[in-house]
Length: 275
Image (cartoon, rainbow, N blue to C red; front, top):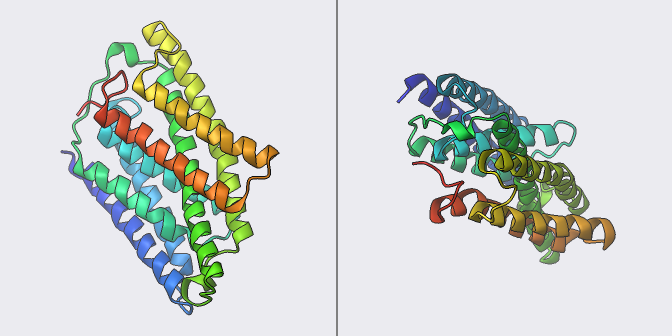
């Protein structure tokens, strides 16, 4: 086990945890000054995490996304980046409290899984691998961020309906802003997910001689894509907003997680992780 690499990942985990703590402190304490610290902590964690990922790529001599450990770490890295990009111009300090738990879960998962470097089969050594993985994971990261906004929307809506105007009600953004966040993440994530599936199809044609083989991963990727395609169509043409859009976003995120982890760990196929 590489001590430097593991130490960098632990450092990122500590900073993501600090972001979560300061995020919840700000959320539950009206007079708290923790607001700027949550984003600073996540930003610092991202930098440390990026160093860890770069080190891993150097050691593996390729884009380090070949096994479960690397995939968990890479997803957390891109989720942190998606958070920083979305909040760059949108002041949403409470979003850190709903994003950092996912960062912690995936980074901790990476630390607890085997860190052995898995050699790639020659057939998978292609330009299309980094392109496919980067696009797919980036799309999933933005859609996961949208799920955080959807959860915030449902909580805020419940608090308004029950007229609980104290506590976290005072810090959560207005419903319209949360719905706009949800829509923004959908508009950013869905095209990336689409390009990821297309690039994967092209790569499959070169690697296995077929664009589509109905592998379990491919099938669930299509199901996930159809869920978000329906959500985007509903938003653009049928006026889907608010609660309905938030619920569908959460369902879509659940499909992402099953496609990402459930399929790879529970079902056999071309995309199964090497443990």
